[in-house]
Amino acid sequence: MAIKIKHIDPKITDFSPNDIIINIKTGDIFYKSEKALFKLKGDNLNTLTDTISFNANISASKGFFTGPTLGDMVIGSQNSDAFEVGGKTIEVKGSVEPTLSSEPQYDLGSLERPWRDIFVSEGSFKFVKKDKGIGFSKIGTTFIVGDYKFENTKTFSTFNKKNVDDLKEGKSISGSGDLRVTGKARIENQLLVNSGINLLAGGITGSIDGGSF
Image (cartoon, rainbow, N blue to C red; front, top):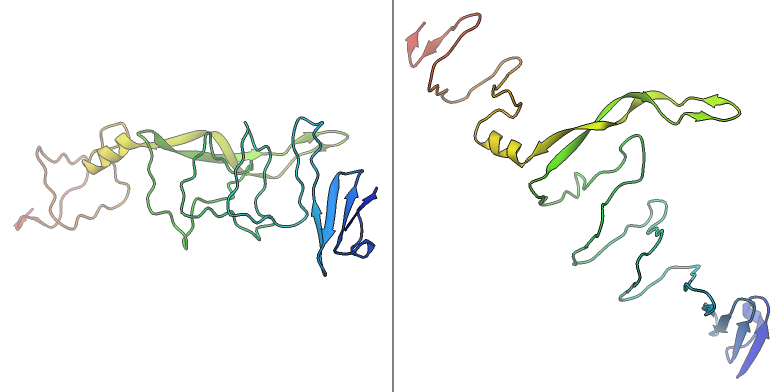
C-alpha cells in the first residue's frame, strides 16, 4: 500500500486499489475499488466553520445538526424530489412562509393529499385581500413598469373562533346583529320566530301552518 501526494484530483487510472492519494491543495483523500473512485472531503481546521461538499446524493439512517442555524438549505431540485419526514413530528421555532411572490403559488395539502385536521389557537384565519396594482417597477437606465394585475395587499379579512361559535349558535357574524340574505332563502323544515315578522315591503304568499293568507 502506498500513499501518493498530488496537487490535483486524481483520475481512476492514476493508482491501484492498494493506493491512497491525497490532494494536498484541497485536503481531499481518494481511494478506489476495482471499478469505482471514492473521495473523502477534508475539513480545514483553520476556519471557524466546517464545510462538507458532496457532488452526489447523501444517504444516512439519521442526521444530526447542531448550532444556531442551518443557513440557506434547499431540499429537492426542480420539483423532482420531495422532502419526506417519516412518522415523526416536525417542530418549527418560527414562521413557515412560502417563497415571496405577488401571486399565491403554493397550497397546504391537495385534493389527492388533504390534511386530516387543522389545530389552531383561538386566533384566526387571515384572508389576504387582492386588488389591482402594478408590481415589479424598476427605475434604471430605462423606466420599466410591470403588468397591471391583481396582487396581494396589506389588508385582510379575519375569521376567528368567535365567528365559528356565533355561526353554530345561529348568530350573525357581520357585527350588525342582522342575518342578511341576498336573493332567495330556502328553509327545508320549519321557521320558528320568537317575536314577530316585520315585512318592510312585499307580502306573504302560500300558507303558514295550513292557514292561508
